[in-house]
Each structure stands twice: as C-alpha cells, then as structure tokens.
Image 1 (cartoon, rainbow, N blue to C red):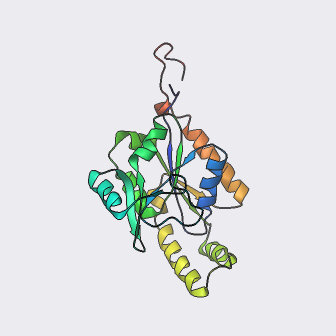
Image 2 (image 1 turned 120 degrees about the horizontal axis):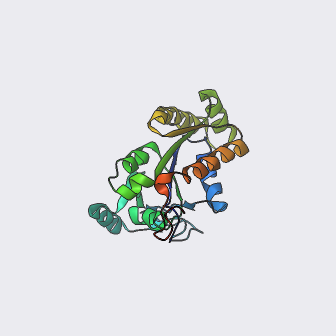
Image 3 (image 1 turned 135 degrees about the vertical axis):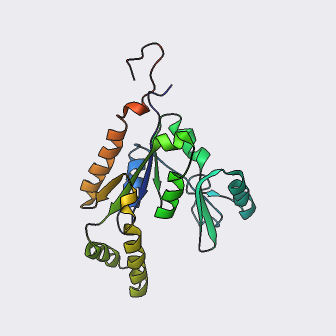
Length: 207
C-alpha cells in the first residue's frame, strides 16, 4: 500500500526552454515516470513500442478517442498523438509520480479532465526564458535550423509564452543545474501535501 498518491507533473514551455531536458533528467534520476504517448506515425529506426511510443493504427487510435480513453490528444502534420488516461492512472494509483512534457493545447485538455484522480494529482509548470532575446539566442545557438525555421519557431514560442499565467507554477530558466534543482524541489514539496497522504487504518497518524 503506497503512503501517498502520485503526482501528475505537467510541464509546458516554448522550444528552447529546456523543458524536455528537465523531464528526461527527472525520469533518468528515477524521481518520476516519463509518460509514454500513443501515436499513429510509423516507428523510426531504433524506437521501441511501449518505450518511445505506443504505436497504434489510425483505426485503433480513433477507437480510443471514441471510447474516451485519452487524457489529451492532437493531430500534428497528419499524425495523431495522445496520452492514455490509463497510462497515467496506473502509476499515480501506486504512489509513483508521472511527468508529462506537453504543449499548451494539451495542457488545457488535461486541466479540463473531470476524473477526480487526475484533478487531485495534477501540478502544472511553465518553463520559459527570462526574455524574448534569451529565447532567440537559445534557438539560434542550436545551429541546426535555417533562419526561416528559427524565425517560425521563435514566433510560435512567443505565442506559447503568452499562456504562462494559466499554470500553477512558472520557472524562469537560468542554468541547467539551477533549473533542475528548482524543478526537482517543486516535486519534492508537492509530495508533502497532506491531501496526498494515505492514512494507515492501523495508525492514522502515520503517512
């Protein structure tokens, strides 16, 4: 029997904010489970079903939409992506924290979920650079995209940053180590919430 219910830590932020690196490091440190999404796109070389994604046919994906199985889903460039509610619940029911790297549209869908377990578990965080100039420097510093692609990414990122106020927490990015220290500290603090503690029937005073 777990001592507490798990946390669903939902993380959004523009391209270049470092949110994916934070989420992956948290999972690598075994602090949380990195939620595995479903997709209709074909697996790429080296990708493993059930680890990188759950690879579904279009028919299977649509059937899960109809059944209300997805916590959130979207179509991007002709391929569909989504997070199964069961994928999250199986962990938080066991007191295991789950981290999700998700865009602002997906975050809005998760917030709209009426399932009481999801609502009680949800903690959302927006990660962003301190200024638009810092964001532009990060995107340009990758040196992997054309100027046109960088300009489009910057435009989309600035639009996405306008949604930060919809989140419970905001992290203004500094260095990778500083960001991760604050990121992990948020999760640790949320674990102390009394509302998450499952009281023992033999000793109610003990979490």
